[in-house]
Image (cartoon, rainbow, N blue to C red):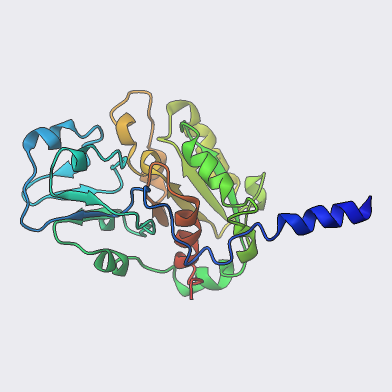
Length: 251
């Protein structure tokens, strides 16, 4: 019996990808948008964006609002989506991509945590996830970061069951009124020092639900996020690289 178990394990091989830092994503994945410098966007395309992520004069896309549906690119506008997935920023305004902005220039905007945070959480970070009215897409991708394939645990980053065991809160969803108090109480229960990470378009801006009366985002007026991870949903590799980048671990 034991021999058969060892034999089966040998056939399975090594399930985890060798290096999530340099691993590519599918060519079909919509990531960083490139905007042609000399192009113009039809006002109808701007008006049709479901989350008002596109603006004109000059053309710009707010990745904190963009759902990466690709409708603007299919409409023949000067916008083209690449599969470059490492899009996290520490400042909300840094998520805006204008015409002619290269991916390299966009990545240079990303800032690391201060030295105190890197020393405290650089080798071990425990995360508590709060689904604040999300559709479960971001939640599923966050869960996938700890599976055998992506194996975020190899970097000392794990998801815990209680905020009292957590170093960071990852918020997904637009923050519905029904979850507003629960989110605030979870934050209060997390010991200091602690980090706040917004994962996905809905968490960052409210997305298509931003104007809904069922949304209550006042928590973000009291607590400033440390890290924004755009996407709808972000790829597990985007999440892993965002945290490693922020903590200065990618090198």
